[in-house]
Image (cartoon, rainbow, N blue to C red; front, side):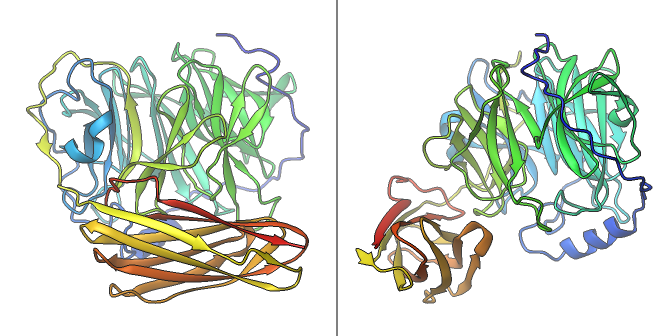
Length: 490
């Protein structure tokens, strides 16, 4: 599939800053010391199995669709898991590999890990469908992104050389292309020729991350950052070059049919703290479609199929969420206590799953949310929205998150939760997103949790509060996980 003019749109060329790339470990090590004590951070708060441990058996029963992912349940936390698509929370099976990021394609997998040593020894491990590690490649920094081409020929890794997240203005990354069969590094993308506005472009601040491969595996898309802006680039591995295209495209993910790219777009208009929103770009028309997930989430999307995208959300009880690619619908939990999803599209040759061990049993908590508010107010008045969350059981719900997303002429002034018997973690108002969030450590079966949201009407129109709830446990009845209350301001 060749590049059309609609796919790559030249952008205005800023003057690149001439700042040196300070590749030091000092800040990264400090961050590792801090996150080692952070509750819920995967890879440091768990007791790791040896990352080199393999596990025999095939990835999946031949012919059945499945998802490979990082298990975040307490039992086997951090280990690679595999589950049939229709029974993910019931039949996940665990391999012996511990990974911070994982991806898989055509019998070859890529596992990125920071390791359990100090100082850290980040590496990329190439494993087969039996989960045995065949090759190891040293990484220059903390693991961030991993992708394997659909034919298993190439892999790509992104790691933080300095900084620890894409919201750090001083971060620097290293992105490698790997020959998966040989277990060798093909190139660092910083060594590729950059073509911009039809001519070579050089800048000391050029930074790449988030590779996604086309069907032929030689072509790929990625993000280039330079001059304080980000761009979509289309690359050619054989030619060792990338062509700069559309601005403000981060962490691209190419759809299975090769016609669209899912990505995160910065929507904070240059504020100090980045905010992103997931979008889908039609490569032929150039049209962008914002997705129904409105929270700012830092992840690289994965296509479940041509209609649905997946992503990890550590803000929602460590769940893998799904969202329609056409901008409709609502975000839905697909996998509980999981991250780094990789959809297995190619059946494996060995149908035996004997080398994988059964995963942890996950309890069930049927949560229901309701929201009420006055029917009408006048601008300037306060509106109190009351949210109730009921756990219908059968099990207790843990790490319960409740959000109220406000739309219309108003702003959220405050949020308060009445502590349940599980004790409240508290509430926070995210002003730039006009969102309130409350969480509680545990909500026992049969308990009702009440939250009050105070909203100030700022003008005429409809004020809509959309409440949602999620917990660490799978919810057998998801239709009542969302509720909306409308107040007319006039």
